[in-house]
Image (cartoon, rainbow, N blue to C red; front, side, top):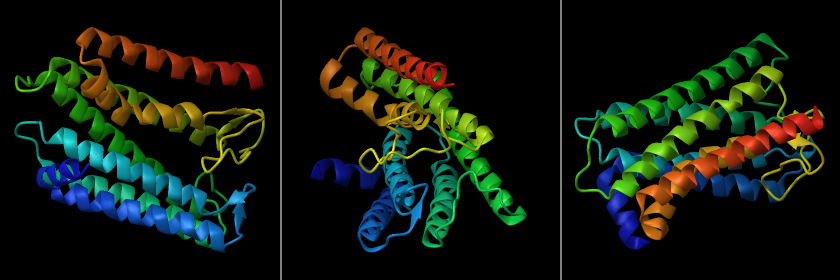
Length: 250
């Protein structure tokens, strides 16, 4: 682990420290859940900023690692796009949590509606930029990397992009639940519903294929066909889960 952290810092010092900042904020937010009783949709208000900060930490470190392989890539532009856009999301979500107000789905005032739209725009731009990185992994060759590892990065990015855009399905409905209104049955910290369909499940799992698939491929599978097969199985399972929940609870 120490070797990985040192190597990551050398590869992309900017995103390395940004990821550390997000991890620190995640710890702060989870600590705040123990000292505040403010709730939103029946769960502690600080769970949401914790989840977004921790997820951003994982995304920043993963992309810092992968983008190092790309030739002639403007890494500074990518770094600051991620920092500014996702930083805005975390700030606004935390700001609203501290006030006991919704960040997502909040269109109760023109200001809240505009800020919610800005969050959606920020997430969209980061997702599109990540898709562009994925295209670069398809259009460039990487003779020094194992082929199965390259395919894991390619397919991990594709699945990430697909299930990132599932956020539009939730945003357009102003609701992440199917069969109820924004149900949070407090399934551990994640808060997924235990009683109705929840679109956040496939959204979350699909996005973190970005980290899971390359790790499994590099350390466990070590085979291109197995990597591609697992990726398609992973994608199909998540997609089926989302469809089943919509059909079951609609």
